[in-house]
Image (tube, rainbow, N blue to C red):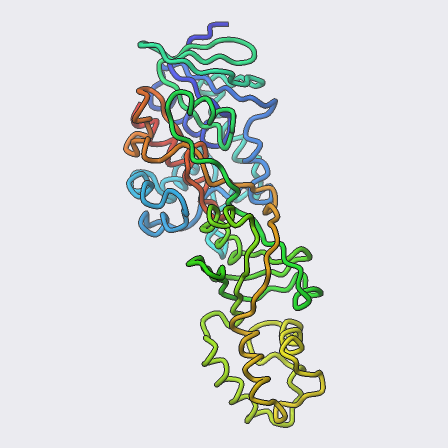
Length: 402
């Protein structure tokens, strides 16, 4: 087999395949190969979005889209003006895959199966004559004046241009670091909080819209909060974990979380609301019905945590109890003790320092003819199709540059 190629792509995932297809469509004469260390390609695509593949998000304005990236917000603005979510939809439609928008803005193939995306990629790679070589674990990268040398566990390849789209692969990061790139050490980015607290002990599966804050820090977020048997999850918590990835790692995932179950109502306002309820519902038992837009069981738990008994009527509520209940509603302190990975959609913050990349071409500023796309860079996003959008955009820009 001839091991010389015009283009070699390291990493047979979403970014790798998308880049390869776009390069080959624009340059029919180029010899392109994808090297994948595993037995299978596109394995993360297969499991993403619960096996449905969350292709992108229905956010079509680049300046809005960048706000979903804790790392990469500033750098992606230019690239998203070149290739944004709307372009992704058009690209897949042109390649025979129709996408649909769900209520929360996430976009999936109409087939509801990630296999549709995998088939689209593998069919096009086959059609374009791109070689996909599996079981090729890259051992070293070497640059000469004319070409790149890529040594795997099986053989040595040469290419004019090298593209790295190997995701969060420590071994590849190490090789890039030996070549002079700065690697921001990886830490988990999307995770849920482990909390053991009597107030939420028997409430698993219950969800409420809340705002959350890390005590003694500027980190805050709001959104649906889900109580699980190990603690707290849901979009609000995941958002906090993404923006706080570095800071929470430094705290070793031990910190106090402030929860406001009334979202944007503060302590003083909550006291006033409770005083009004006391006047309105004098004869009613407090614990019976939640006066707020969250479940009764959560209300019961917060009432009891405020030192109010099950029999207490609104009329009998003391000033001290009103203050304690307002405190529980708007400023509950929950001790976080560790984290859990969010499903199998493991995302890391970390990777090649973005200062070393030219975002007009996705080429390394240090090493000519080396391009990087996807999670190998220090870019990550919250869930909702944003990490894939970063992969598509990077791959498209590389194909244009080449």
